[in-house]
Amino acid sequence: MAFFSWQFILFLAVSLAIYYIVPGRFKWLVLLVSSAWYYAAGGGLKACIYVLVTIVTTYAGAVIIDNIQRQTDRQLKGRRRGQGTAGLSREEKRRLKSAGQKRKKAVLVIVLVINFGILVVLRYGNFLASNLNSLLKGAHSSGHLSEMDFLIPLG
Image 1: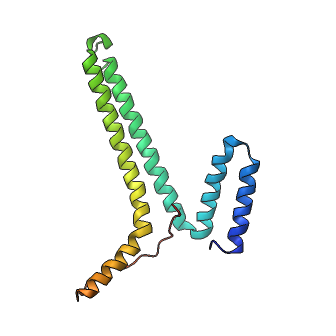
Image 2: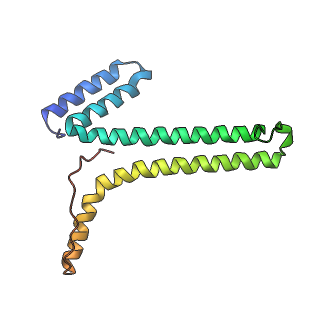
Image 3: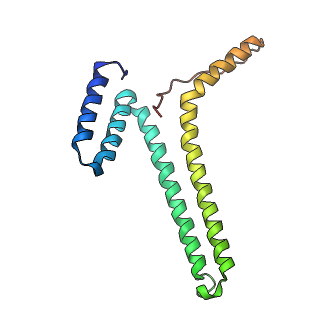
């Protein structure tokens, strides 16, 4: 769906009307449904792959972060060693919390790198391949990188 087509203008008008009609707590849902509808109309099955990858990586990251938090809480309570929190010094508690926070941040960074990495490849992969092909051609090389036909996400 091109930005200057009558279908897009109609889609935008309907989406904006619904956005301003619904209560504030549901505005995010209107934006989510509108985005999904736009990608489904523009790319069909290809759009489902983007949505699926984002959902899976975000959900998996959240589950892993939750497990790290539970493990840290369990260690702080001393259940593994059969002792209460009195058995851990302040320094040990601080060290356990810090280690848990570092692990959770690492998982978050991995999820963000995966999702933004996909976005970068989809947005700039063909640009990079085209420029590398020009360089290879200028160097009289027989190598050639093929360009892909992706449905390019908006952001």
